[in-house]
Amino acid sequence: MKFQNWCTIGICCFLIQCFVFAGGHQKAIALKDIYKTGKIEFVPVLKISKDSLPADIPFKGIYSSCRIHDRLYLLDTDCSNIKVFTADGRFLKTFGKEGRSESELNVPNRMNVIDGQLVVWEIGTRRFSIFNTDGEFKHTLQPFKKGFVDNFDSPGNGNLVIERTGYSHIGDDVYNAVSIELYSKNFQLIKVLYQKLLIQSRIFKTPGKDPVYLPLPFQPKVSWDILPGNDGKNSNKLVIGCSDAYSIDIIDTETGKSRTFTTPYSPVRVNEADRIKYFESFNQYDKDGNVTVQGADQFMRDNTAFPEYKPVFKRVIADCEGNILIFTYTDSDNGKFSFFASEFDAFDSDGQFINHVKIANDAEISLIQLFSEKGFIFWGRSAEKIMPIGFTKYTVN
Image (cartoon, rainbow, N blue to C red; front, side):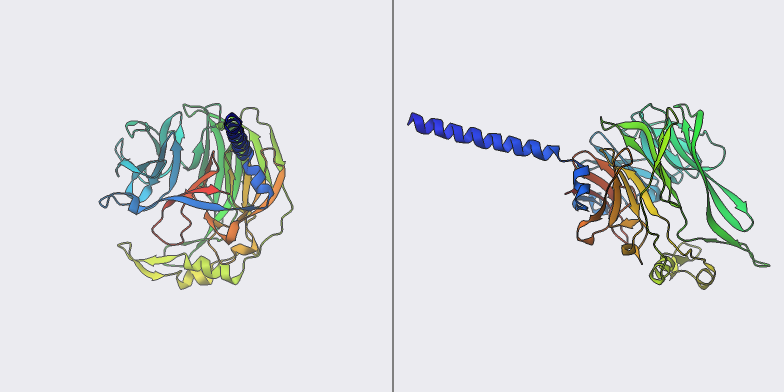
């Protein structure tokens, strides 16, 4: 009997050791190891949509998002408020309302967590409104007299990286002047980190009529993110690139030192399916904002100039482990919206190429508001091509 008891205990200890070893081995797996396989699976485990809210609270669209502690914040520009959820998708409350007074929001389109507070950029008033994480209004700041803020974040030293844009005209062409700048906490400019002038649209002038601005499709854009450090918090390094070339810079915001990495790339042609999809994305409206005709009008169809090739990439992001993901255009994107992706190039934090990675089963994820968290978790706008728009939590395999 004693021998049997000791055997039972021994077997249990052996199984426990195996379980612990397996668990430890599982924890040792990194996103980089998944990228090395050349394949990744994004499994939706939670979706936040209008069905996640009480029936009397509208949910129109997500323009910006962020996480802090156990809360998820979604900026709903069309509702001029911020909707707050728990990490498991339970609705908590909204705060903010439309208006121009302090504590009100006027066309808010970008939000981030800075020094433990929610900072919201408003296009309508060209100001930052600051709230605490409970939604209590603190104050506003208006550091810029002109131009717009397209993105902002805080590197590890507590300063601010702000992407600002302004418009300039050269003949009948309209350009976006993009500037990535480093500011102190009190919004004093420290230095300019990156600048780029990018064509955006073309002006058509007809005698007796107002000028018509036609956007130019498939034009290059600037994309950037802040690399996380070993502790998972933002480091002082910025990864940035313009999609006119496969050239990505890693810039130290403190020292100003930078290095560039690239990888061989075959340009992807713009084809007829791309042209059709592009025109389908435009609608014609009446004075009340109702859609009267779906698709672009004949003037746009006759006068829009398409480039021969698409830009190199759609977006640059850094995952929670410091790897750099470049969502390039590929032949699989023909005839699809540019904010969806089914493959990407993965690099480590030093810019060393890891692999070209395809998303399993040719599934697509939305690149809008996509960000990564520890535990193989990604958050992003739901991969839906039609309204309503939701927000999805993915785990990756």
